[in-house]
Image 1: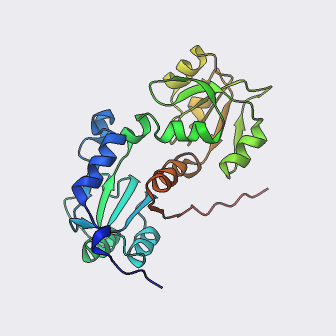
Image 2: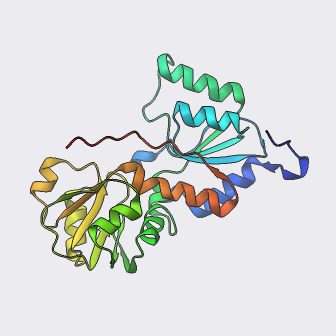
Length: 245
C-alpha cells in the first residue's frame, strides 16, 4: 500500500541540498568531479520522499518511482561523460527520471573526503580506532582477522600477498588501489591495504599485502547510513557475483 502525501511533510529541495552540502561540502571533491556532483537532474521543488543509492541503475530508478521518491541521492553520477546526444540506454533511463519529475543529486568524492563520510563509515563497520587520514582513505587499528573482515563487509575478499596479522589497516573505499596511496599507508605503519578493483601492476609494486573487496561492498554502507541517519530509504541494488572454484 502506498502512503499518502501530507503537506506538512514537504521540504524544499534547497533545504535538503543544504543539509547534504553541510555534510559533504562540494569543495572537498576531486577536480575530476567538477560539474559531476550536486543536482545533476532537476525535478520537482517540493520534496516529500527521499531515497539514497550507490548507482542510478534501472532497477534503482524503477524502485524509486514505485516508492514515489522525489529526490534520489546517489554516490555515482549517471552522467559521467559529457553528452552530445541522448539515445539508447541513456534515453530510456533519463526518460523514466524526467517523466517522474524526480531529482537526482550526486555526492561523490566530496563524500569520500568528508568527515563522517564514506571512509569513516567503512572504518566504523570494521571497528577501526586510532585513525589517521590519508590523502584518500585512512589508516587505523583493526582487531579483526581477514575472514572476519569479509564477514563484516558481506562480500568476498581476495588476498594478494602474505598476511601474517593485521594490527593497522589502511582503507580506501572504491577504486583506491593507487601505488602512491599504498606507499602513504606504508609510511603510516599499515600492515595491509583494503580497497577494490586492483590492477596487476599495482600489486606487483606494492610493499603491503592487499585485500580486494568489491566497490559496492566498500561504498554502499555510506549511502545506507546516510539514509538511516535522516529517516530516508536506501535502495539496494547489489551486483550479481558468482565465484567459480
